[in-house]
Length: 297
Image (cartoon, rainbow, N blue to C red; front, side, top):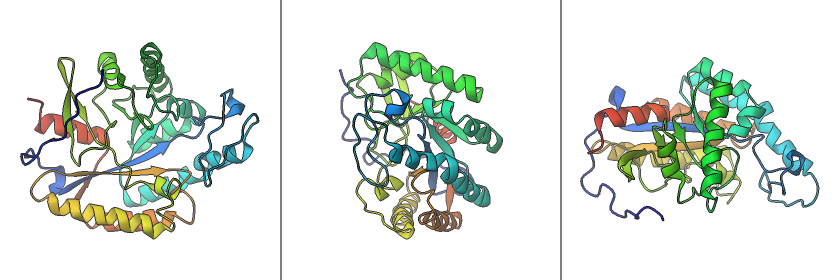
């Protein structure tokens, strides 16, 4: 059974919550770490991932081209992006697939040194829709164990690649320890959903202010396309933020925005937002602030 759909949300009655540092908009930069978690025959998977700089399917053999594209994110893109965030002193939430964390454990060490958040992006880069309940329950436990082993602490956030299953949110609450999930795309501010007899916090994610649009639909071609569209969204939300709390999620991928032909768009975006009335925050910080200042009824 699925949760009852909610088309109303807050409606006209948005909660009165002020963001820290007089921010009119909470800005959440999310860097997705998926390298090593993609489907690949080389790792014993039944098929290869087919989306990188182009869409191409290689069947029955390792796709060395695709593997190399993913490797770029860990080898070059990650470090290029981190240098920018160090320059602007902006915190990050890293959406990390647990299998990718095992492949690139130094990312956990870097996150601890910088104070960034490690959010769980599932075991691998896969949808959970239709996954058997027992399999998903075991997968969530495996993810938490892997984070604890490699990073030294369990994740407090969860975000499924593509669609969650009808059981995902309930299983997260059942497991315990998760402050929030981001398996929703239906609002510009946090909200609660009742899961069983417990209120559960949801921090909606966004696909429009996301560098995946360089790949999937080719809506973004040059770096400034990404910057211009995302700043248009931020300006509108800043204006609305004078009257109601707003947040924006800006999704990044090491193998996408980390390319030298696109990174200038991220640099311009960070520069523009740094002079705006915003609060740069990890998702964990947004969740804790909302829980403290807008507790569930």
